[in-house]
Length: 70
Image (cartoon, rainbow, N blue to C red):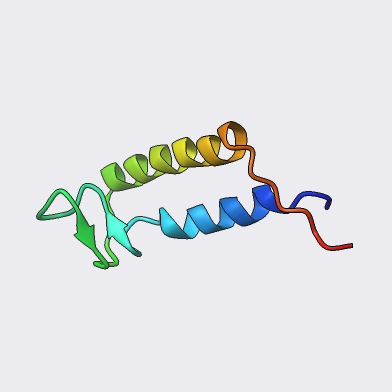
C-alpha cells in the first residue's frame, strides 16, 4: 500500500457518520439527536449520502494523501 489516505479517511468518516453513534439526522424527536444509539431507515439514507459527499470532497477535491514512512 503506497497511499494510506483512502483507507484512513474512509474508516474515520465511517465511524463519524454511523447513525446514532455521535449524532443522528433526522432524529426521532428533533432534527438532530446526539448520542442516542438509535437509527431509522431515513437516517441511514441521510448518513450514507453525507458519507459519500464528504468522502468525495476529501479524497478527490482536496486530494489528501498519507504516504507510509519507508
